[in-house]
Amino acid sequence: MPRTHILALDQGTTSSRAIVFDHEGRQVAVSQKEYPQIFPQPGQVEHDPLAIWASQWSTAVDAMGKADLEPQDIAAIGIANQRETTLVWDRDSGKPVYNAIVWQDRRTAGECARLRAEGLDQLFAERTGLRLDPYFSGTKIRWILENVEGARAKADAGKLMFGTVDSWLLWRLTGRTVHATDATNASRTLIYDIHRGDWDDELLGILGIPRSMLPEVKDSSGIFGESQEGIPIAGIAGDQQAALFGQGCFSPGMAKNTYGTGCFMLMNTGWEAVASTNNLLTTVAWRIGGKTEYALEGSVFMGGAVVKWLRDDLQLIRTAEECEQVAATVADSGGLYFVPAFTGLGAPHWDPYARGAVFGMTRGTKRAHFCRAALESIAFQSAELAGCMVKDSGIPLKRLLVDGGAARSDLLMQFQADLLGVEVMRPKEVETTATGAAWLAGLAVGFWTSREELLKHQEAGKEFHPSRPGEDMSRMMDGWNRAVERSKGWADD
Ligand code: ADP
Image 1 (cartoon, rainbow, N blue to C red):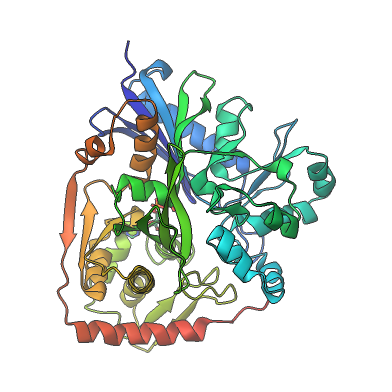
Image 2: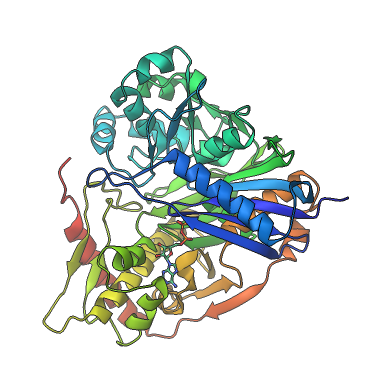
């Protein structure tokens, strides 16, 4: 019997998802499970590695059950994952030595500042395309080695393994036999030379990370190993790169923005690793057939997560959808600006000490203004990224392809189109991350044969056209810029 489907695992920051695709690229079954966020201290975010694994595994079983499929029906598994999140586990027992330190976690801000003070920013930027910010894995690995009892000695003895979430899932799926990652995930670690395509011994030395801990770096589309059920794991990419692939941004100049927990704008720059002069990152888009393609990236740490925060913490709304329903009851935010710098600011500000702030509250401020300002904050931050991207690439933005959970909000998408003054195009299916993972895996096993074939699977959704005067929007952007400046440098270490 031919294998008829592809299983995509999308291990996100707040939930694990499994999606089954058929040969026409249609999603035939979806399963999603949220798992707990751990906040040990302000600015710190952790996940339980076993909760990551358990939630991911159960959604995989559930999705296959819903689609009435057996493992022998699955041609390949593709993995897309929250990036940078850092896990270290014991090679022999397979047990994590500490919780996963999540990409949003700021605990290594001081360490990054020290390395910057030593003048190392340039070296890290040249080799890795990144900057010395706690966002990336490198300083998180070091933190675990230095703060978990016995970890340093074990690491030096070759007994520990590091992995981003993809490696952890791969290791578990293959019955603890394969320790590997793909080039996109490696490119987010601060210890990988994106030009040579290898771990960098000098950077490893600076951060005190033994090479023996590191996974083998492989193509994003290719066989990584086999699951215990006999399914090849044939595609791995960081979630943002997977979304770029799943949006069909195959040629230089094409860009997408994903509105998930954070917002991530990536532009394909082809074979050339374009160094940013506007505080963006240079990153691996994917490596296929041994050849690396690159992207420029702008990352915002709090995107759709502001809506989750309004729902779960402030309890201003009961569901994410309610945010826009409430926001739509007012014509504008009433001068309210909400800077969600809860875990510092990412691109283009890179201030780990910024914290959340609300400006412009008056006696007339209502719940609806808060909801609206929260949604608008997502668009303001994304507009800042777009501005930098245009400057770095020299390519004017003609349209923006969007995806991710919060892209479901029409109000947010319309505001984004108004703010950017370009059309915003949302595909019918906003889960392009899973699509990208499925495509990478399907291409590797010959389930699909070419990128052209994949593009035929794309279904158009809704387009949003700019409808408000440019001067109004630039006035609002000015207000936003003032608010952002005031939120900077608030926290001390
Ligand atoms: P991730 O992969 O980072 O976990 P998702 O792409 O699933 O994120 O997006 C989830 C985020 O999108 C959540 O933070 C949620 O608050 C937000 N979100 C989901 N639906 C909506 C909606 N209809 N309106 C606004 N925000 C939404």
